[in-house]
Image (tube, rainbow, N blue to C red; front, side, top):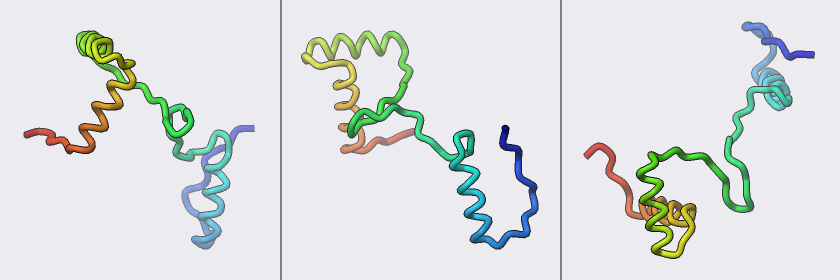
Length: 89
C-alpha cells in the first residue's frame, strides 16, 4: 500500500497536525530528513569528488608523509576549520 499525499487543508488543531506529520514522516517511505553518510563509530563516511590531478597530488603527499589519503584529507579539513577560511577574497 502506497502512502498518498495528504490533503492541502486540515481542520486538525496544530498539535494534532504536528503528530500527524511526525507519524507520516516516520514511515519507511516518509519525508524525514536523513544524513546520507555511512556511520562508522564516531565518524561518518561521505563521498567527495576531486579532479584526478588533485588525487594524484594527495596520494603523493600522503605517501611521503606516511599517511593514508583519508587521514591527509581529515588533517587538511581540520586545519582549515581551525584557522578559518576566506572564501571569495
